[in-house]
Amino acid sequence: MRILVVEDESRLAGFLNRGFKEAGYAVDMAANGEEALFLAETNPYDLIVLDIMLPIFDGISVCRKLRRGSIDVPVLMLTARDDVEDKISGLDAGADDYLTKPFSFPELLARVRALLRRKNAVKTTRLKVADLEIEQTSRKVFRAGTEISLTRTEYGLLEYLMLNSGQVVTRTMLSEHVWNDDFDAFSNVINVYVNYVRKKIDHGHDKKLIHSLRGVGYMLKDA
Image (cartoon, rainbow, N blue to C red; front, side):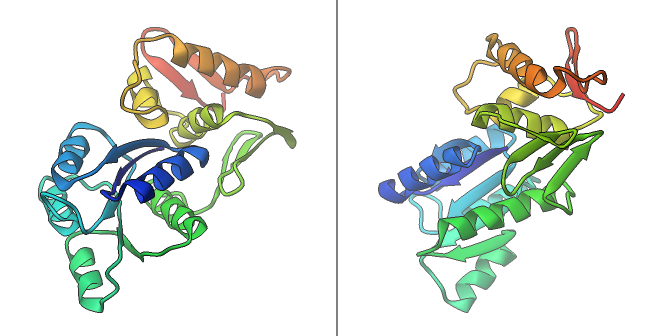
């Protein structure tokens, strides 16, 4: 999952960047409203974490502009403002959730997971295809009841394939949702990681779940 974090306070921005990456998300950063709008209009994010007090355009203005531009990515607002009127303004501008500073990072992660589940119409934290299961909260993966150890990047790739099970996932889609904005989608890194994941998931099983579609992309399916 790929997140855009919009925060102008450098220390907090660095903390959020590290925290989300350690949690397995691909992260892009913006330090002002203008940059946030440019990135959000250019890249297909799964979620935006948006501060309200920003240079150039404030967070509420950014959110309004995104919604007017038919960008419906979930938005979670972070702000030091805790007045009810400010919360109402943020939600009325199109935000999906609101968290007041200072906050607990585990709570922020929980809210992010909830918004991503809502976006993908996933009502549970457990994904299942055939005998392959992912527990999203703990980030544990099981095949036929046996736990499989994955790196953060491997997990992100597998989770995205499972969220789109039965559908073609192109290299561009993987590069946009699993890696950061400076990643080269035409490098062989994606092939390498798909092979890593395939070996861990399919090795030793008669039923293969991860399939390569030559010239198109990849598909995870129960077939």
